[in-house]
Length: 116
Image 1 (spheres, rainbow, N blue to C red):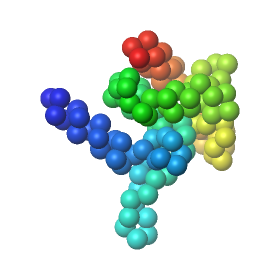
Image 2 (cartoon, helix red, strand yellow):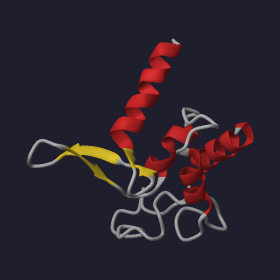
Image 3 (cartoon, rainbow, N blue to C red):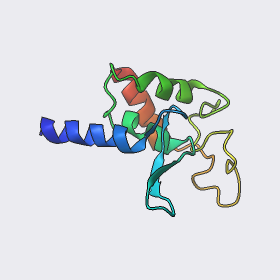
């Protein structure tokens, strides 16, 4: 089991971590069939932390915690936003993932902060 967990963690780092943006991003294939990141800081950026797959000694932990703690990004007086306040899609059109605070996600943040 540890082998698979290690492989999954490495794949998440290799496929989804964007060094320039310092966050986990969606991955897709561009018109040249090359893997590229689509970065919209929000719940997707903190899922490795939410699921407990981000080790306390991971170099990714500080940027994830900084994203959670930043009031210009995910932090709000009411909980963690679904999408960064700075994102071009924040609070636009279909607002389902674009700004509301979801209690289950906030519970996972608190649960994993307690463990970290």
